[in-house]
Structures are given as C-alpha cells and as structure tokens.
Length: 113
Length: 114
Picture 1 (cartoon, rainbow over the protein chains, first blue to last red):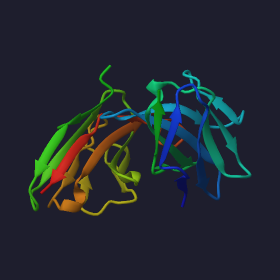
Picture 2 (picture 1 turned 180 degrees about the horizontal axis):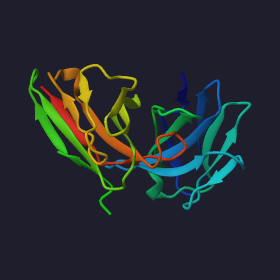
Picture 3 (picture 1 turned 90 degrees about the horizontal axis):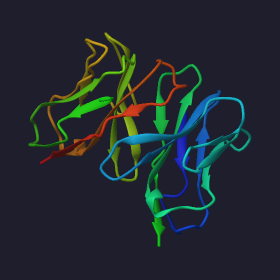
Picture 4 (picture 1 turned 90 degrees about the vertical axis):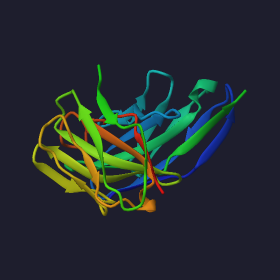
C-alpha cells in the first residue's frame, strides 16, 4: 500500500525568503503526485500535480515541485514567499491504476513579516 | 459554479445519536470520496465511490456508512456517534475514477460529539 510522509509539521519563514516543504512517498508501482493548499476554514485546493513527463512542475503562483523517483520524493519549493502563502500544505499520492488518493499529515507554513 | 457542496457546516451531537452528512456535486464526476481531517494526521480516507451503486472502504471506515444512488450525491452516515468521531469531514470528487486527476473539495463539515 502507498504512504506519504511530510517531514516537517510546521515551517516558519520570513517574508521574501525561500522555502522547501518536504514530501516522501512509498509505493512499489508508478504514482501520481499532488500538492494541495488549505487556507483557514476552507477545503483543499490543488496547487500542482505530477502525472508524467517533465519531473519539474510549476504552479501559477510561483511554487514548484520536483519528482525524484530514485529518492521517492516530491518536495515543494518557492524562491520567495509572501504573507499570503501562510496556509497548510498537503502532499498526496495515487497509485497508477488505483482508485485511492492518500494524503500526508500536512505542513503548516507560517510566513512572518 | 457550485462545485462540491457540503451540509451542514457545523454540527454538535451527543454520543449515540445518528446523523447524515450531505455531499452534492454538480460536475458530473464519477468518483466521490469522504475524508476526515484530524490534527497531525492529515486527511484519512473513509469511503469512496466510483459511480452510482458502487462504494468501497478507505483507510478508516469503521462507524461510517455510505451509499451512492445518484451521480450527484454521496451522503455519509454515522449510525451511533462516538467522541472519537469528532473531526472535520471533507467530501471530494474528481473527473475520472482513476487517481490521475486532482480532487475537488467541499468546504467541510465540523462535527463535535459530546
């Protein structure tokens, strides 16, 4: 069965600094990978996804994530964060050919002025 | 664009009471799912459905029932509520039953069991 580990439960960072949120997965077969963002009292929204092809994927608001098959990782990065990026971020994995999507425990990103 | 609609938004129950959490989507998605969100545990899959009349268990199905009589609706039933079921519940749907599409989430139902 697949599983997802988000290595940091909370990440505090100053505004305009770079940030990396780490995600590792385990699966014996091919996977699809997702990052979702959750703002307070809201549902989850898709941030970016890796299905196949280029291992580097980008979102419209400056986030990027790189699929690393050998290290089974899908870390999320942003070169310069804004106060508005404060939220909880979830990494998720689906197994190729499967129905279920499994989520990590989440990482709370706090951006300080 | 309604998307995924969950009702109610908040609910307080007493131990042993029953309740149905409603979920409806207007995107004609075949796949629908229910998750619970607890601090430090992320989202855990309770049940999912790949179409009308077809449901299956997720990671934490005990204490919950589901049915799927139409494509649009996927209600979650608590037959006898327990304090351990205090949580935030999210319903989601996606286009296509396989996992290569992202899910669309509702705004959640915050449930407290006393």
